Length: 610
Picture 1: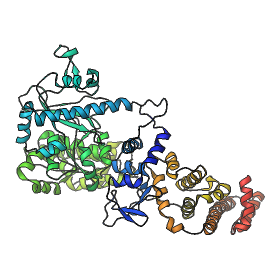
Picture 2 (picture 1 turned 180 degrees about the horizontal axis):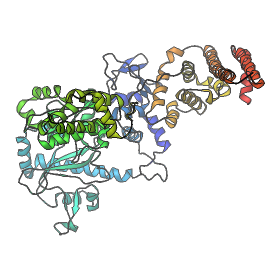
Picture 3 (picture 1 turned 45 degrees about the vertical axis):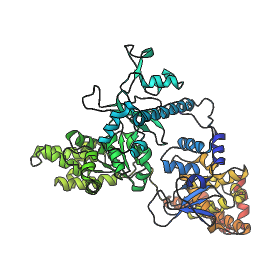
């Protein structure tokens, strides 16, 4: 179970990380008056609308609405959860995290594993670059036209043909065999071929370190030098406390910012393909690690991109893998394109022989997932026969059925109708039959896409005033019960601002304790704090504005109650009940009193004591 970070550590992180320094470590900031501005990393723009406010320790984009504090920025930019963002920020400030008692954290053990794997990676690379044993691997990489620059960037290494290379290294550097086993570097042997019955898992292989999103080594993939070498072509780190192959994407730590820029991830099959793409300038390339693409992979990509371009081998296995992967990404709500490579080619061979421009041409002419699938089916089925057409239509419908997004589904059905020359209605009918449930009409795919929320005018204006002058929150607390708000976010921001002022706490810290996982409350709070120009004025004028807004919100409730009474009155049989007449008269009188603060005050006081 992941540990719960102690509140005191969260507060220390907030205190010791300046938002300008944090954002500035990722983006070039320029001072603009009291704030700092830059181009927003979360949407495409030509004029900077992304603002960082040092005084309030927040950021906000006036273009796309992104906003929050240091934690929110790291979460959105790195595509990580709150706990991971806290760890990144703790590392920046040199803070040792503390955890709540009994929360089951094992970060200390993981920290030791990270250190071990980082040192082993350096050891493997020294063998490759500097030892006589590494000469065959250097020749192999040279023949594959992998330059020293990219060997170092991807931290490629080599393990010689021995059973105990890493074991001997560990003894010298005070690591135990148990440590090596925890890191997936050694395995137990029935034969005593090395000390204590363990042997090196990786032998005579080019080593590709696998990193997490924070650029920490979490495992390895070892590739044989020659095709006639015994064993599998690739040997990967087994499942460990750090390495989960169903979640890992090779080179994501290098590619993620380029993926964000393009809003598209390029998905390859192997490490060499990814490295070749990066060398050719296609730096948004990643690959799965020794496994088929999973829902976890798709969710990871979804953090950074809206679409994927699949660039798999051109053989039958590659075609099948492309269709299977496309379905996984479609299920996550991503748009999918598939690059059709010439027969016998993979990304590495094609770029080396044809060049960057030719590969860009393939990307520009990539096929939709359905069109690619149709072309594959045409090569394997007689599409002119009834049976062939039925098989093809069913295969396409199985792909379409993966998307939970009604808009994407409708678009795919229309495309399939054109590709197969079948009426849309017929495909929709067959899809319903395939799903055995109604096609959803809502586009809820679970993705964290920004949604423009329209807040009630009076409530958002009141939130602006209270955030700017929280000392006026006493009026709200006394005369405006929280249940009178129709917008939960506005109410939460207002009462968070009041609590922060009363307890002398940072507003964003209070917000964090109330926020949803998508950070919507933090975005609204950041937007409101950036809106001080709209609420600037003397305390007296602010107080008048707050009183006026309180009256409008209370008035709204009374108007609704009177409408409900009138509805009962109209639907009732015969004459209205005397109690309804009395209630209607009372509400009409109250509405007149609520026109001015002076006349409304006794009513508000009475409401306060109810």
